[in-house]
Image (cartoon, rainbow, N blue to C red; front, side, top):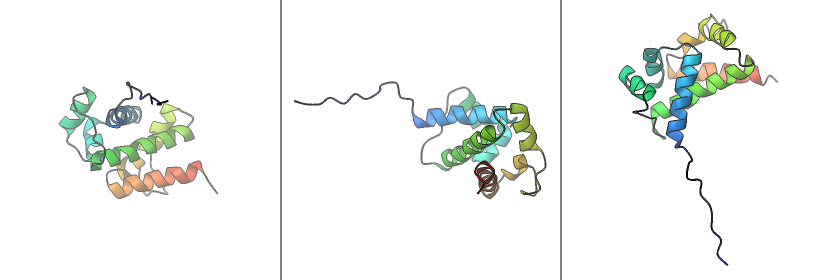
Length: 127
């Protein structure tokens, strides 16, 4: 007797899902398209095309990996603030003594993005 494995036919591509999550996270944190572009290493027009559904992130690329980190940042912050968008924006844009600057500024470099994600991870699961 042969076994038939059913494959879901409506599974969205990872790049499409990540692109949507990235844009929503940026919007909820009050990040402009130009700033988001600089964070993930693409042009501002590319962010505009992403918003219109004409361009998606491609798995295995640097922008894809940076987008994963940014979405992780957002999810961690959202969990910490209990989904309070106002509190998330205030934390994201406000000064942070542990980071030495506002998280919104720190994410301007890959190293800064990684530091902010690490900081939030440490706040979520203190020892």
